[in-house]
Length: 355
Image 1 (spheres, rainbow, N blue to C red):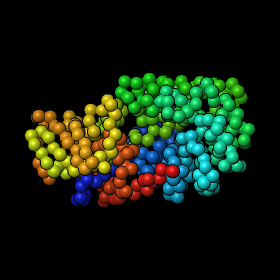
Image 2 (image 1 turned 180 degrees about the vertical axis):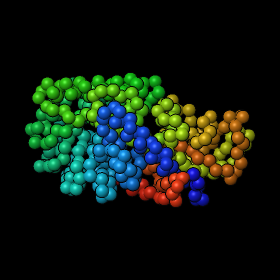
Image 3 (image 1 turned 45 degrees about the vertical axis):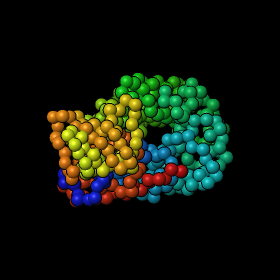
Image 4 (image 1 turned 30 degrees about the vertical axis):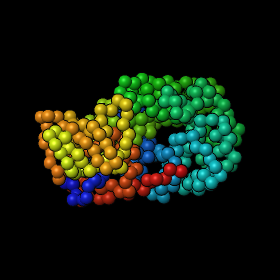
């Protein structure tokens, strides 16, 4: 795979590896008997979402109405907004307009949120999924306390489409499997409570890229998103191998000494996320023992093993960020390369669509 001669740093997607990742994910979900509804806030790129649909995804997940407007305009017809939105009149107007063009579902986690949705939306075709907390403790109601929410939806003639959760605590190497079990248990409890009250729970949505590998039972769909592109976090969580990572930043060595190289890619292109357990600020493709030990806005410092290569100013490296979702959101366009196709550019069309 030849890289184009562009000014560095620039962000690149290996299309061949991306396709491999999409196919592997679809095979895994088929084996588990669950549907795939990938979270497209990871990439914010309509072309990539269409590839995910072509590989068997039933729809996509998004975070904001603004993102949904971009993807609906790009022809995506089934979208789940997987957060408990608080609908102002203007947001409700925008969401209602989307519902005339696509199948829209949204998350709720409180009676107050449902009452607000009912008062601002009125009669609507939008469906609602109740979020339950499975241990991440961000949003979501207690799984034992879902029935009042379902009753409130019914009272307002709003369509109850199912339940969902997000096991965000799976992003820790010591509790990844525990988080997966928490997810399954929370969805099972909520399902039992609702079915005992006479509700049908046909859709149970969950999943993250780290938890997907160990998820068993309860889920009918997964919303994993990072699997498509990968990042350094997934490598360190042993969810993906370095060879699986499809997105990287092409960068130039601008200074070097002994086993240390300074490159021209800093936090303004890689993002600044670093989990407490991470061994660095990212990884270097092709050099698994190298570590990015320091990060500033426009530079990163990489330390290689003493026995490793010695880099000189002008040398080109590819680094992968810790958190791909943040890195993608820092650029307007991404270069897409392939072994048998000319380089392309994909616009990060939903970048900055935060409301």
